[in-house]
Image 1 (cartoon, rainbow, N blue to C red):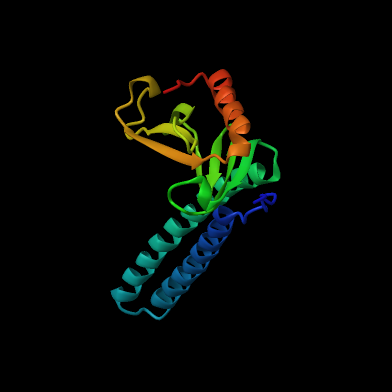
Image 2 (image 1 turned 45 degrees about the vertical axis):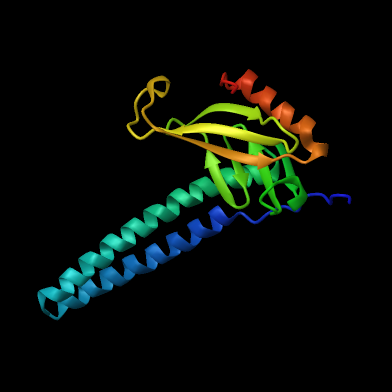
Length: 189
């Protein structure tokens, strides 16, 4: 069975960010309106409390939206091919989970099935390797650094992202490992 070329996925990070930012802005406008009505009509303190609550929710939602929009720009660069190292799709026969999916791999992060993970001080990439066995998987091992300390002495949570590698993409996966070993000075398991 032949594989078709991977179709460009939707940038869900950017879309979610735009929705959050828009909702945050609307909630902030609503909070200002409640403040104006509460002060203008000299109404009960309840209006002020409601306005402060909406103000906090609006600010938080707006901040989350802006952060997601910034991350969405990184995803957009990856999907457009600007920061792309490799990409492929995989079918149920390629992995034991019997699900199809896709991956876009860049120097600064990976976009797998709509979820973006970026490498940073707080998400420090430790190792990239191909698993052993019949069904090859490309594994990204990273540490979520909770105390923002030196990445070499992290007391964080170790995680792995494992991606099925179709037989015809083994060379691409090996070149990804080589890239990260050479460019990022990370380890190999």
